[in-house]
Image (tube, each protein chain N blue to C red):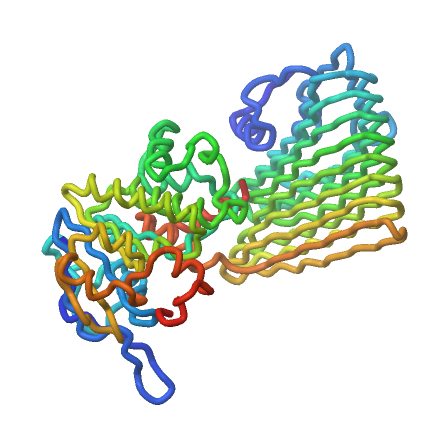
Length: 252
Length: 308
């Protein structure tokens, strides 16, 4: 279980400090999938980075399984069981997919074990296992490898920052299936996804709407989702991925 | 024959991956003397008579054979200049493994300057691997100045892998090549310097024949107070393709100077130079930290991968 208590994050502004996250309290219970949504610039990615330890909160506390991890480093949080998938997967020259999965697993991973993680994200493992995690891979491929590295850690809490960002429609369809499968095998852990996608919101147990750095709405999916349909917080994949589509302007 | 101590064996492993006497033709040079030599039916190794060094003659059509000529030095204060000439016959296809390891525990500088000349016959294929390694706790420097000259006839192909990862204090590497029609040269250089080491790497490649090509790629890491210069020049004298690339990571107070040089003397010469120098990207380190590595472990993984 992950718990955020009165979390705030501000950055120095030209005249006064700018608050990106304001007094956010939130619980991600065990065995639950929580989706954080809301307009762009609302602080969603910052919230994910605060959980992973990449940014330090200016006030408030973060608890993992009851332990206060607010002062813990990125490395310590990873070891305690926080998994984090980047919105923009990082590329590495010379580091192969299998190397990254071995680092993630923290042990000598056999090729067949590594292939298992790739298969779980819908990749034909033998085509990828020896490839470098560099610019020769497409955005969709990098996204899936990114998710595979989180799976390989078997974390208590997995945080995915906008998994749909920067990929094509075809890749997105496949990605949704990956998350649907993840949802089925959640037992003993919890998942937090930052997303605008209606199909991802559809598999949530709970939905949190973050707006201007604070929680605007929060509750079970059936309660929150109807009020979001047709807004930018819950767009169908076509509208989001094809901004020129009719009606997209109204939801941008 | 082949009486090598523990340190010499360790150096051999580092520079030539040799755990025992190599198969095929070889010459092992230890502290300026030959510690073992073997020719084969197709590859003849003979010592030069006028200067220090070897002549390696590979018969035309020799296939799937290898030549190992590693050098190890464990005496402090030794300085040597060696000329090794390779004559590779037409249509041969061989692997040549050179390399030099210096262990200097004394207070005097140890230096090995090796000049390697390759005369590559028509349609011959050569893979050349050269590794440099230094160790030892003495104050004496470990100095290596390799000179490589390559003369490629029509349709020949040479692939060179040059590696210097650890322990060499001072190195000045000069590689020159002249390519005939349809000849191909590929160079992969990997270099890491640390402490107050200095490394200069100079290339002058002349593409003289039609459809000749050269691809020279250097990946390097400069740590601590070390300094590297990568000076690569390709001269296109015919319809040809040339590409040089310098991709470098700087850390601590390390410095790197990359000097691109392209000279096109033919309207059909296509030459490209790329160079990128910078520190390790912050998001690479953070990504590996989210996978449970410390910052130092993350840096090590990134550098290891980069120099793979």
